[in-house]
Amino acid sequence: MGGLNAFNVFVEKPYLAVSPDWGADERFFRSGELLAHYWDWDIVDFAETTFDCMSGSVPLRHAMDMLIARKVCD
Image 1 (tube, one colour):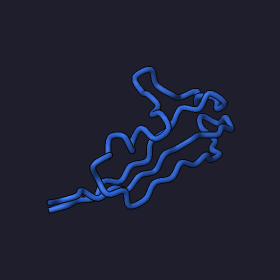
Image 2: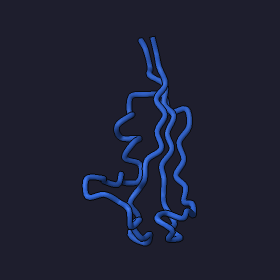
Image 3: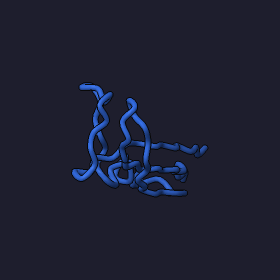
Image 4: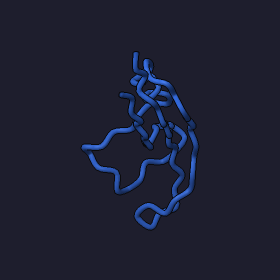
């Protein structure tokens, strides 16, 4: 039977500052990297967006990829 996977991941952009609370053990995804991992799934929805936030009381912009994919069954 098929299933759905849904992800929101932070994407590295050289023009966006890294949050001051970003941990040394964390990593950014590259633009479209999730699509490469789900090449054999049905992509229900995918978008890349940037948004404002107040991370650690510092105004920042972040980039995020959002993916919803359905497992393809034979």
